[in-house]
Length: 271
Length: 271
Image 1 (tube, rainbow over the protein chains, first blue to last red):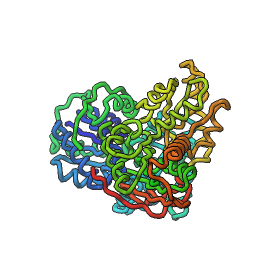
Image 2 (image 1 turned 30 degrees about the vertical axis):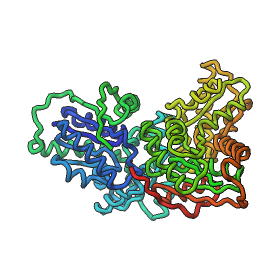
Image 3 (image 1 turned 180 degrees about the horizontal axis):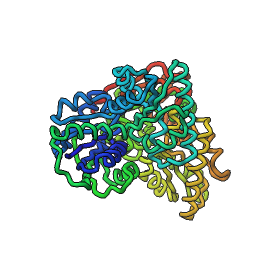
Image 4 (image 1 turned 90 degrees about the vertical axis):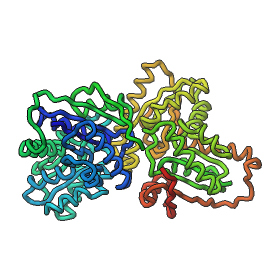
């Protein structure tokens, strides 16, 4: 089984990392559309165009299953990608919402994400479909803190404390009795331990990278015959593609993947 | 005199703010190419294409003098803009370097900027032309902290303390005896007071927004006849253009300009 993982940048590597843990026998293709990031500020039509061209590249390279490890593309372009390709496609927004659905007994959940994801209200919509009430909060400092490598810094702990206090205040104001917090950005799994320290004890943290890998594993486990799996040896092969500087991708990406990235191929997907 | 001010986003409004203080009698046009930001990650050719189309729009609206209040465009596209338009063009990198040149007696200067500006080494090159040694440091957290509105936050004070300590260490390591610090990003003037608190006393802080406005004032004062000035009444008119959400531009921009922004016209400059 060859699984294609797509993100606008390196954040989706946290999803690949979780996939490698849960489905070590698969082969992987990862594409970071780094030349055209960030997707967050772009229109639905543009994001759909970028995401489908990226998806098609992964299919052309042999992907038999696609994971959209990009919140913006999952929120704005999942239907367009599903129309463009003939393989199963799973996005991080739906897998995060599915995990929240399974986790929450109060049916009230909290979501933290980038400003662009929050403005799209994709998590609120996905939660509403599952009869969950959701409150979303934008945490714009977390991505730059992660990219700066300040994971263990007291600065990050203090920023998280402030964000979480604001979120709890917001939830109280809206009368929510939340028992679940969804990390709605693929950068946030790197801060999971810090976030768990910053939230009140009864709140269960859903890491959408983990949630996605678990759901893919269930789907492939249940339907591996239909999906053409079988006969893989252990020891997955992983190939990386980026649309901009492969040097930057390697340097920053290794932190997200948790192991060194050797070979990245530069691809040109056009404008 | 109609002065056009251009930036990829709202940061250049700190330059407009300084211009309004120094040359209150001029009329202003401000264009934020918000649909295509950030410029930092893009190639020289793309930045030149975006910046010249933006410059042409300002000329078409009547600008008789252009201020490129965008570090990336100043670093990568100043020559292209000068070739594309027939009016005087000034960029923030050269005005910052000019101010450092006037300020420094040790001939060693420090520059803080975004990662993209530092990677372009535009300040090092501009300083070298003026026989100044420069050390540049990327401070990627400062723009999101400013955009979050955390100007007075202890978090920002701590981030600045860390960045400044790293910069001083870097300068010591390179054997520099710096007496001047250039704020090489148009967001940073909003943090000027905090930065001045964080740096060692003998370091003079050059705010490139102020430096730019002072240089424009000198040029117009000296050459106002050639530039067609004369007959302005006090009480400048300011018109705003943005290539993406005017609502966002108004909300975020007002903080940078230091006064409310009423009317923003959406313009389409193409791809």
